[in-house]
Length: 317
Image 1 (tube, rainbow, N blue to C red):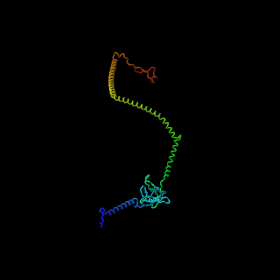
Image 2 (cartoon, one colour):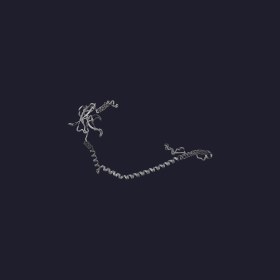
Image 3 (cartoon, rainbow, N blue to C red):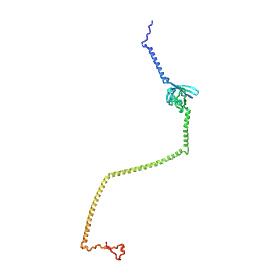
Image 4 (cartoon, rainbow, N blue to C red):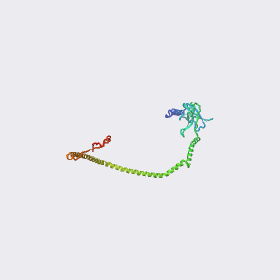
């Protein structure tokens, strides 16, 4: 008779632990799926709009649809139709009022090599209605220009530039053109540059000699000025002394002249008194003739009618 099997104690409750682990894993996967679905807008209402394209190179399902750079939906389906390829866009309903019926869509990329996306450009036609799109509406698709169109555009833009360059080169090669004349004039000027340079050096040397002469003269004037500054006080003192001496001499001459004049006046007055006294003396008085009175003819109207004798008038000689 066999003994019953007794499981080890470490496996006690293993079934409950496995069930709890599996339940946790299932809940985690379900949460991740729900989160991804939420991120993809599975729980948000969407509105489907369409556009037709001649080809859908670069467009695929699930591509992001953007409005003003913000993601507002995705590409849901691509179907071949009579007008080309019919593309279904799933737009979040909350952004539909921002998309008028006159909007257009175009394929763009984030940068030059980034991921592609469908860009909705609202209000493509300003004269069209501003009513928002509804479920099932069709909007216009603006295809990107191909390489041939880009090359043709570049060609059109470069053609005027190329023609202008051709005309410029033709004018440069013309014998009588302005460029040739300018080059000939420049050549003549370059040939005259050595002579002009030599004359300029001579002028600079003359100017240098003149400056040196001026500096020498200024140095001499500075020395003379210094000498005058040193000697001027002494000369001024001597000149002041000489002027004071001249003033004293002038005062002495004035005093002597005044005294001599007074003496001469006294001498003359004494002589006049002596002469007067001599004339009054009885010895000389009789020999000095007194001043006689002379008669002069009167030059008047009465003198012509008078007697031949002329009346005399007394006059003092």
